[in-house]
Image 1 (cartoon, rainbow, N blue to C red):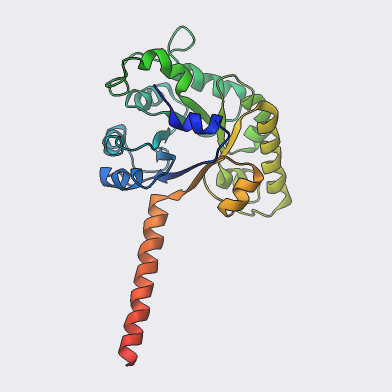
Image 2 (tube, rainbow, N blue to C red):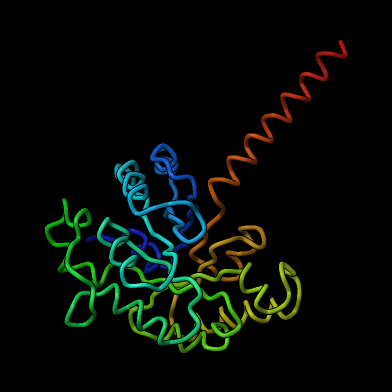
Length: 255
């Protein structure tokens, strides 16, 4: 197994990605050809199933874009399923403690180090060395998005199998009592505390939803950046095109 996203992060480069919510292969067929470093299949907040996600991954298999998945919860069966269909990384939501991460590592790792069940039905289809390499190559990505996770952030990130992680800024701001107050000192201090922990542990900080522009996000030190979601981009592009057309129509009617 070769994880291109892991290679990008290990070189110290910034990786840019997108989250997908619309469960149709045409979406990833299009997005896979654009040049994103990763696509995050959001099984937590989108109506995606393992079956629909499999079809979407097949549609982007021609591309260099790395498929990662945010699972609904830190649970053995779903982690096994998404890895078996070929996820190169798993985002674990609401990681609050070191034990939460240890559970995810056990679920995602084959014995004797872990308890993942053998059955990589698609993951090994064209990769005879998958089982020998996947434990090292798969990214396990905790998501820091609560006060408790913040309190334990350095403990969480210090585990050997954790190379990178995501911040969930919306849930984090709500947990801190400063919902979407991105300039609030309490939120700013939390972000800096997380970035300091990343530096201290040698892990790569990521953000799964932008709370400021991409340039400032990169300048802060984030290197794993999801720049948006398919639904939002579709809405923005359609609304912009419609507004331009309406303006042209109004100009034409004046003549």
